[in-house]
Image (cartoon, rainbow, N blue to C red; front, side):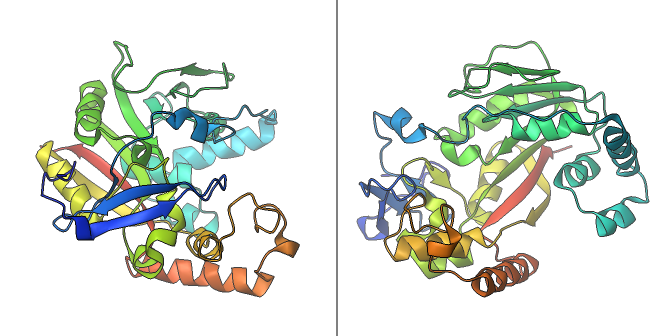
Length: 314
Protein backbone atom coordinates (compact mmCIF):
# COMPACT_ATOMS: atom_id res chain seq x y z
CA UNK A 1 0.00 0.00 0.00
CA UNK A 2 1.03 3.62 -0.51
CA UNK A 3 0.79 6.37 2.08
CA UNK A 4 -2.39 8.43 1.61
CA UNK A 5 -0.49 11.59 2.56
CA UNK A 6 2.87 11.42 0.71
CA UNK A 7 2.27 8.42 -1.63
CA UNK A 8 5.39 6.68 -0.32
CA UNK A 9 5.38 2.86 -0.44
CA UNK A 10 4.65 1.34 2.98
CA UNK A 11 6.17 -2.05 3.74
CA UNK A 12 4.61 -4.92 5.71
CA UNK A 13 7.10 -4.52 8.57
CA UNK A 14 5.55 -1.14 9.42
CA UNK A 15 2.29 -2.79 10.47
CA UNK A 16 0.60 -2.47 13.85
CA UNK A 17 -2.32 -4.58 15.06
CA UNK A 18 -4.56 -2.31 17.11
CA UNK A 19 -7.57 -3.43 19.16
CA UNK A 20 -10.84 -1.53 19.54
CA UNK A 21 -10.66 -0.55 23.20
CA UNK A 22 -13.01 2.36 23.71
CA UNK A 23 -16.21 0.31 23.56
CA UNK A 24 -14.20 -2.79 24.38
CA UNK A 25 -15.00 -5.16 21.49
CA UNK A 26 -11.26 -5.95 21.19
CA UNK A 27 -11.61 -6.42 17.43
CA UNK A 28 -8.26 -6.12 15.68
CA UNK A 29 -7.43 -3.62 12.92
CA UNK A 30 -4.33 -3.17 10.79
CA UNK A 31 -2.55 0.19 10.86
CA UNK A 32 0.61 1.15 9.01
CA UNK A 33 3.09 3.92 9.71
CA UNK A 34 4.69 5.56 6.71
CA UNK A 35 8.48 5.39 6.83
CA UNK A 36 8.75 8.67 4.92
CA UNK A 37 6.32 11.12 6.51
CA UNK A 38 5.46 9.25 9.71
CA UNK A 39 1.67 9.32 9.29
CA UNK A 40 -0.21 6.39 10.84
CA UNK A 41 -3.14 5.08 8.78
CA UNK A 42 -5.72 2.32 8.88
CA UNK A 43 -5.43 -0.28 6.12
CA UNK A 44 -9.15 -0.49 5.42
CA UNK A 45 -12.23 1.18 6.88
CA UNK A 46 -14.83 -1.26 8.26
CA UNK A 47 -17.99 -1.38 6.15
CA UNK A 48 -20.08 -1.08 9.32
CA UNK A 49 -18.11 1.89 10.67
CA UNK A 50 -21.31 3.63 11.89
CA UNK A 51 -21.76 1.10 14.68
CA UNK A 52 -18.51 2.28 16.27
CA UNK A 53 -20.05 5.73 16.67
CA UNK A 54 -23.03 4.76 18.80
CA UNK A 55 -23.10 7.00 21.90
CA UNK A 56 -20.02 8.80 20.63
CA UNK A 57 -19.48 12.58 20.90
CA UNK A 58 -22.52 13.25 18.73
CA UNK A 59 -24.90 12.28 21.56
CA UNK A 60 -27.59 14.92 22.14
CA UNK A 61 -26.88 17.31 25.00
CA UNK A 62 -28.92 19.88 26.89
CA UNK A 63 -27.34 23.32 27.16
CA UNK A 64 -27.81 25.60 30.14
CA UNK A 65 -28.99 29.19 29.85
CA UNK A 66 -26.21 31.74 30.34
CA UNK A 67 -27.05 34.69 32.58
CA UNK A 68 -26.57 38.16 31.11
CA UNK A 69 -23.85 39.30 33.55
CA UNK A 70 -21.63 36.33 32.76
CA UNK A 71 -22.22 36.81 29.04
CA UNK A 72 -21.22 40.48 29.32
CA UNK A 73 -17.96 39.50 31.04
CA UNK A 74 -17.23 36.99 28.25
CA UNK A 75 -17.94 39.65 25.61
CA UNK A 76 -15.45 42.00 27.24
CA UNK A 77 -12.83 39.25 27.40
CA UNK A 78 -13.45 38.39 23.75
CA UNK A 79 -12.89 41.98 22.65
CA UNK A 80 -9.73 42.24 24.76
CA UNK A 81 -8.41 39.09 23.06
CA UNK A 82 -7.92 41.16 19.91
CA UNK A 83 -5.85 43.82 21.68
CA UNK A 84 -2.32 44.03 23.08
CA UNK A 85 -3.78 43.23 26.50
CA UNK A 86 -4.41 39.60 25.50
CA UNK A 87 -1.25 38.19 27.19
CA UNK A 88 -2.60 39.50 30.51
CA UNK A 89 -6.01 37.94 29.86
CA UNK A 90 -4.34 34.67 28.90
CA UNK A 91 -2.22 34.66 32.07
CA UNK A 92 -5.14 35.45 34.38
CA UNK A 93 -7.67 33.07 32.81
CA UNK A 94 -6.72 30.90 29.84
CA UNK A 95 -9.57 30.03 27.51
CA UNK A 96 -9.11 28.04 24.30
CA UNK A 97 -11.82 29.99 22.41
CA UNK A 98 -10.11 33.28 23.23
CA UNK A 99 -6.74 31.84 22.26
CA UNK A 100 -8.05 30.71 18.85
CA UNK A 101 -9.72 34.12 18.44
CA UNK A 102 -6.45 35.89 19.16
CA UNK A 103 -4.37 33.83 16.71
CA UNK A 104 -6.90 33.78 13.85
CA UNK A 105 -8.00 37.40 14.45
CA UNK A 106 -11.70 36.70 14.03
CA UNK A 107 -14.44 38.90 15.48
CA UNK A 108 -18.12 38.57 16.43
CA UNK A 109 -19.22 39.00 12.80
CA UNK A 110 -16.89 36.32 11.42
CA UNK A 111 -18.53 33.28 9.84
CA UNK A 112 -17.44 30.06 11.58
CA UNK A 113 -17.89 26.47 10.41
CA UNK A 114 -17.22 23.49 12.70
CA UNK A 115 -16.64 20.32 10.63
CA UNK A 116 -17.56 17.24 12.65
CA UNK A 117 -19.29 19.40 15.24
CA UNK A 118 -20.54 16.45 17.33
CA UNK A 119 -23.18 17.70 19.74
CA UNK A 120 -22.26 21.34 19.15
CA UNK A 121 -20.12 21.82 22.27
CA UNK A 122 -17.45 23.98 20.64
CA UNK A 123 -19.92 26.13 18.71
CA UNK A 124 -21.86 26.69 21.92
CA UNK A 125 -18.67 28.00 23.54
CA UNK A 126 -18.26 30.47 20.67
CA UNK A 127 -21.90 31.49 21.09
CA UNK A 128 -21.35 32.18 24.79
CA UNK A 129 -18.57 34.58 23.80
CA UNK A 130 -20.91 36.55 21.52
CA UNK A 131 -20.08 35.06 18.11
CA UNK A 132 -23.15 35.12 15.91
CA UNK A 133 -22.56 33.40 12.55
CA UNK A 134 -22.08 29.82 13.66
CA UNK A 135 -22.51 26.72 11.48
CA UNK A 136 -21.83 23.05 12.17
CA UNK A 137 -21.92 19.86 10.10
CA UNK A 138 -21.60 16.25 11.18
CA UNK A 139 -22.50 13.03 9.30
CA UNK A 140 -23.73 11.48 12.57
CA UNK A 141 -25.62 14.50 13.86
CA UNK A 142 -28.02 13.86 16.75
CA UNK A 143 -28.65 17.45 17.88
CA UNK A 144 -31.17 19.03 15.50
CA UNK A 145 -30.78 22.63 16.63
CA UNK A 146 -29.14 24.95 19.13
CA UNK A 147 -30.02 28.59 19.84
CA UNK A 148 -28.45 30.82 17.13
CA UNK A 149 -26.40 27.92 15.70
CA UNK A 150 -27.13 26.34 12.31
CA UNK A 151 -26.52 22.59 12.23
CA UNK A 152 -26.73 20.19 9.29
CA UNK A 153 -26.24 16.45 8.96
CA UNK A 154 -23.49 16.25 6.34
CA UNK A 155 -19.83 15.55 5.77
CA UNK A 156 -17.67 18.31 4.29
CA UNK A 157 -17.32 16.81 0.80
CA UNK A 158 -21.11 16.65 0.48
CA UNK A 159 -21.78 20.03 2.11
CA UNK A 160 -23.58 22.40 -0.26
CA UNK A 161 -23.42 26.08 0.64
CA UNK A 162 -22.73 29.43 -1.01
CA UNK A 163 -21.25 30.85 2.19
CA UNK A 164 -17.59 31.68 2.67
CA UNK A 165 -16.18 31.13 6.15
CA UNK A 166 -13.59 33.16 8.03
CA UNK A 167 -12.81 30.22 10.30
CA UNK A 168 -13.20 26.53 9.50
CA UNK A 169 -12.51 24.16 12.39
CA UNK A 170 -11.71 20.47 12.51
CA UNK A 171 -11.80 20.00 16.27
CA UNK A 172 -10.63 16.38 16.64
CA UNK A 173 -12.57 15.41 13.51
CA UNK A 174 -9.84 15.39 10.84
CA UNK A 175 -8.47 12.05 12.05
CA UNK A 176 -11.95 10.57 11.41
CA UNK A 177 -11.66 11.48 7.72
CA UNK A 178 -9.79 9.37 5.16
CA UNK A 179 -9.64 11.76 2.19
CA UNK A 180 -7.29 14.33 3.72
CA UNK A 181 -6.17 16.02 0.49
CA UNK A 182 -9.70 16.27 -0.95
CA UNK A 183 -11.05 17.50 2.38
CA UNK A 184 -8.44 20.25 2.68
CA UNK A 185 -9.13 21.33 -0.91
CA UNK A 186 -12.88 21.51 -0.19
CA UNK A 187 -12.23 23.52 2.98
CA UNK A 188 -10.16 25.98 0.94
CA UNK A 189 -13.06 26.39 -1.52
CA UNK A 190 -15.26 27.47 1.41
CA UNK A 191 -12.64 29.67 3.08
CA UNK A 192 -12.71 33.46 2.77
CA UNK A 193 -9.63 35.15 1.29
CA UNK A 194 -7.96 35.87 4.63
CA UNK A 195 -9.57 33.00 6.51
CA UNK A 196 -8.03 30.42 8.82
CA UNK A 197 -8.43 26.66 9.05
CA UNK A 198 -7.91 25.16 12.49
CA UNK A 199 -7.05 21.46 12.67
CA UNK A 200 -6.86 20.14 16.22
CA UNK A 201 -5.89 16.47 16.37
CA UNK A 202 -3.67 13.74 17.86
CA UNK A 203 -0.12 13.63 16.53
CA UNK A 204 2.54 10.95 16.36
CA UNK A 205 4.95 11.86 19.14
CA UNK A 206 6.35 10.68 22.48
CA UNK A 207 3.24 8.83 23.69
CA UNK A 208 3.12 6.80 20.47
CA UNK A 209 6.79 5.89 20.89
CA UNK A 210 6.07 4.64 24.42
CA UNK A 211 2.79 2.78 23.90
CA UNK A 212 2.67 1.91 20.16
CA UNK A 213 -0.49 -0.18 19.53
CA UNK A 214 -1.77 0.65 23.05
CA UNK A 215 -1.64 4.41 22.50
CA UNK A 216 -5.13 5.59 23.36
CA UNK A 217 -5.26 8.22 20.61
CA UNK A 218 -5.20 5.61 17.82
CA UNK A 219 -8.80 4.86 18.84
CA UNK A 220 -9.22 2.04 16.32
CA UNK A 221 -11.12 1.94 14.04
CA UNK A 222 -12.58 5.46 14.39
CA UNK A 223 -9.30 7.29 13.69
CA UNK A 224 -8.30 6.65 10.08
CA UNK A 225 -5.17 8.80 9.75
CA UNK A 226 -3.00 10.32 12.48
CA UNK A 227 -0.38 12.81 11.39
CA UNK A 228 3.18 13.48 12.44
CA UNK A 229 4.41 17.07 12.31
CA UNK A 230 6.27 16.16 9.10
CA UNK A 231 3.22 14.64 7.39
CA UNK A 232 1.11 17.64 8.37
CA UNK A 233 3.60 19.96 6.68
CA UNK A 234 3.64 17.75 3.58
CA UNK A 235 -0.17 17.82 3.41
CA UNK A 236 -0.14 21.61 3.58
CA UNK A 237 2.70 22.08 1.08
CA UNK A 238 0.94 19.85 -1.46
CA UNK A 239 -2.18 22.01 -1.15
CA UNK A 240 -0.37 25.38 -1.26
CA UNK A 241 -1.19 26.39 2.28
CA UNK A 242 0.99 26.94 5.34
CA UNK A 243 0.89 26.22 9.04
CA UNK A 244 1.40 29.74 10.39
CA UNK A 245 1.01 28.82 14.06
CA UNK A 246 0.67 25.67 16.13
CA UNK A 247 0.97 24.53 19.71
CA UNK A 248 0.74 21.26 21.63
CA UNK A 249 -2.24 20.82 23.96
CA UNK A 250 -2.02 17.21 25.13
CA UNK A 251 -3.37 16.17 28.52
CA UNK A 252 -3.01 13.38 31.08
CA UNK A 253 -5.39 11.35 28.89
CA UNK A 254 -2.43 10.13 26.81
CA UNK A 255 -1.12 8.28 29.86
CA UNK A 256 -4.35 7.37 31.65
CA UNK A 257 -6.01 5.88 28.58
CA UNK A 258 -2.87 4.20 27.26
CA UNK A 259 -1.97 2.60 30.59
CA UNK A 260 -5.49 1.18 30.79
CA UNK A 261 -5.34 -0.17 27.23
CA UNK A 262 -1.95 -1.70 28.01
CA UNK A 263 -3.57 -3.45 30.99
CA UNK A 264 -6.49 -4.65 28.81
CA UNK A 265 -9.02 -2.24 30.35
CA UNK A 266 -11.41 -0.57 27.91
CA UNK A 267 -12.56 3.04 28.30
CA UNK A 268 -15.99 2.08 29.63
CA UNK A 269 -15.08 -0.95 31.70
CA UNK A 270 -16.33 -0.88 35.34
CA UNK A 271 -12.76 -0.33 36.56
CA UNK A 272 -11.94 2.42 34.04
CA UNK A 273 -11.04 5.79 35.53
CA UNK A 274 -13.70 7.31 33.26
CA UNK A 275 -16.39 5.16 34.89
CA UNK A 276 -15.24 4.89 38.52
CA UNK A 277 -11.98 6.49 39.56
CA UNK A 278 -12.05 4.67 42.90
CA UNK A 279 -12.12 1.30 41.12
CA UNK A 280 -9.37 2.25 38.67
CA UNK A 281 -5.66 1.58 38.87
CA UNK A 282 -4.91 5.28 39.36
CA UNK A 283 -4.67 7.38 42.49
CA UNK A 284 -5.12 11.16 42.61
CA UNK A 285 -1.33 11.37 42.95
CA UNK A 286 -0.90 9.36 39.72
CA UNK A 287 -3.26 11.65 37.84
CA UNK A 288 -1.52 14.78 39.08
CA UNK A 289 1.85 13.36 38.02
CA UNK A 290 0.47 12.58 34.54
CA UNK A 291 -0.90 16.14 34.24
CA UNK A 292 2.50 17.60 35.10
CA UNK A 293 4.21 15.26 32.65
CA UNK A 294 1.76 16.23 29.88
CA UNK A 295 2.42 19.94 30.39
CA UNK A 296 6.17 19.30 30.29
CA UNK A 297 5.90 17.36 27.02
CA UNK A 298 3.81 20.17 25.49
CA UNK A 299 6.51 22.71 26.33
CA UNK A 300 9.15 20.42 24.81
CA UNK A 301 7.13 19.97 21.59
CA UNK A 302 6.48 16.30 22.39
CA UNK A 303 2.77 16.32 23.27
CA UNK A 304 0.44 13.79 21.64
CA UNK A 305 -2.04 16.31 20.26
CA UNK A 306 -1.71 19.73 18.66
CA UNK A 307 -3.70 22.64 17.25
CA UNK A 308 -2.62 23.84 13.79
CA UNK A 309 -3.56 27.22 12.24
CA UNK A 310 -3.51 27.08 8.45
CA UNK A 311 -3.89 29.76 5.75
CA UNK A 312 -3.25 30.24 2.08
CA UNK A 313 0.32 31.10 1.11
CA UNK A 314 0.40 34.76 0.09
